[in-house]
Length: 218
Image (cartoon, rainbow, N blue to C red; front, side, top):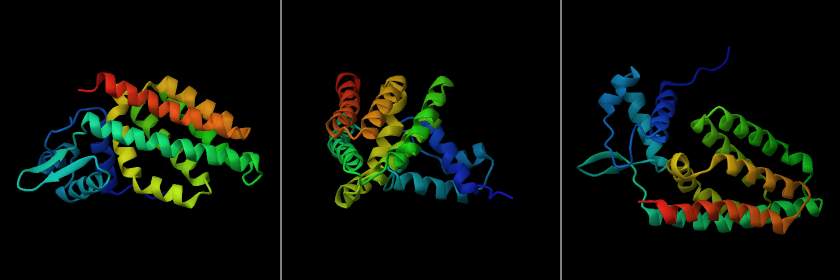
């Protein structure tokens, strides 16, 4: 018999989905009692779920005021993408170099291909939440392949901000079809060990979204 998800996990996933779908808007207050009634469960798993969301940067607790869906400013979004652009560019460069140097076998990249196929399916079926989750898995797998432990350490430190940004900006700014194509281009560059192109593709994707935010975010 498969393990059933805990009530906290169920509450976490449902609240997070409401954030992504913008049923819970940035800046809006979270009422644990109302959420518990809506989800038909006690306040304890809802409270634990909210704490988990807080640790991921999706909600924030303001002393003497309450708990709110985090509102990211345009400056914060842009800064996150600037950091991601640099780190992921070098990370892609390094993974391709490992392939070229024989330090990593192309077969090790196969999980990336599976996540790309999953993202194609999610896009075709307009499953935004599942697309974001698959995208997170793709990048997490990508990070795990790099042999530069210091680079991986820095990425791990700011992964929460990465995830937080991706959940907030995906519905409005990410062209998922184009992102899928960029993932495929990155995968192809990695497979043949083309370090420079891998770096350029990884940076181009982040730069594109960063520029969209600069033009349109209010």
